[in-house]
Image (tube, rainbow, N blue to C red):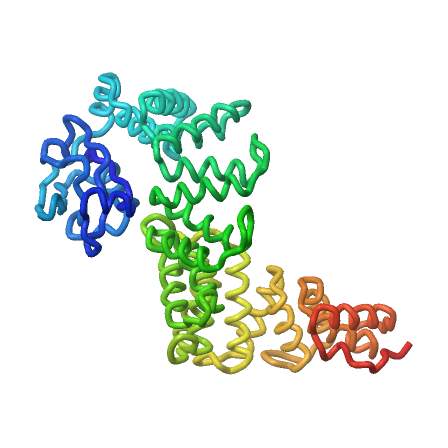
Length: 453
């Protein structure tokens, strides 16, 4: 370890320390006495701008390099009062020093000792010790200790009151994630009365303290009008703050609002740039699959720049085939990518298009519950794309597409039920499905031509 903790450079921090707008990084919030950072002269309120030649974009980048690195010396570039300097930090074994400093009363050392103990490979005894240490760190005034204590209590039945109290203390001590965790309780009615207005207020506090997920949730609530009056401009501002802080989900949603013209005029170029950030992910969080799918669609359709079918196929395939490494779980987006990639192959717009691959991908997407995939699979079987004509299979896939919510699939199935094409005739169901497709907005199903009895 290097023995240093850091937080985000919020607007308040930037103003207090007179940090210029072009200086990015993370502000030091704690230096462990007797640790490498302290020995090298690092101080609270220093701004870490780079480690080992890699620029630091957010405080998330500090965690791994400060508390889980190898034994090589670390070169840390620090901004302090208008001057930059490079410090050499020599890592040490963490647990002995953390235990010593915790016993001496350093609440942050207790927090990090607990954090080190509570790993994926932790034993029940380790977890119990960590819980005690989190409690101790929280009582000693560690904001992060309180937040992590609250999270750990979530795994312990019957301690909901303690959990809420821990999050309240973390938030009072100005920990952004702590405020966000408290907001989650009110948003979900978890141990407290559900209160979206209170949740939004807490998310806003979290966002102001530099928590990107708090900003994401502020954007979500202002976009949907949950707990507050709907305000797309405030939604854009919150998503923008979350995106800059390292939330790929905020970047993705920001792109959607910009594309839709939430600020008055659609801004496709900025939307595509936001989706690219969402798809790339950050040190804080892995790639957002919806961002990748939206980015691929933009390359397919020429949104925000020239069309690039090859790049679209590359992105769709990456999401469809493996969901992208470290991506935020989103099975529906993985299935959607398969459907859209299959559509490009069936339409002949993918480089080296293959109707057989298009049919297979569409079937795969339909099996995953995607309505567009079902419609394309049905169309492929009905038209003999990528294989023989099979009206029976076409009817099955149209039926699946209709069940998944695709109005055109309902209409196509109604025609087959009326004609007995690939499926036994059923005029009653045919009329019902035609009416259903019309009600869902598929205008072709709304003509006055009656379906024969």
